[in-house]
Image 1 (tube, rainbow, N blue to C red):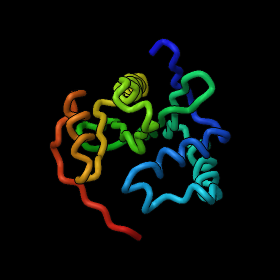
Image 2: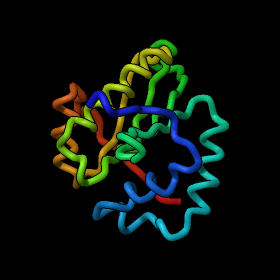
Image 3: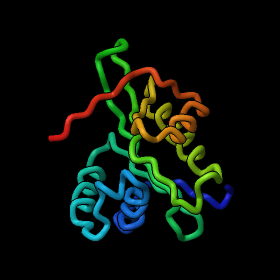
Image 4: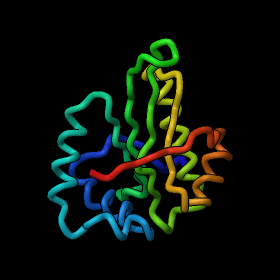
Length: 150
């Protein structure tokens, strides 16, 4: 893994990121890699927000993984700051290589550097392999999440 670099995402990384988001049964239904316009607009908003950290894992010249880390100041837990890990994706031919572990370790370490007292994430209920992965990394399935589409 010494040939792996984790760095902030750049606009030219968006096609690779969107391809990874779309490369699974859930993402195939909700992502549109043929039209990058909404992704580029979203990336501009993220890049302007110091609490948003979209990163890519790069091997050689190829983007092979990504995640988004959001830092959220709060009042609960005695004014604790927490982070939320979202959009973790690894290219199919890189899965099982330890890359996902490296990305999550980066996110946990960065959360500590940002002064967070808690790191949280959600995972779709159907992603049982991902649940085992996160539990192996020390995350607990402690809450039941809810969503409402707008």
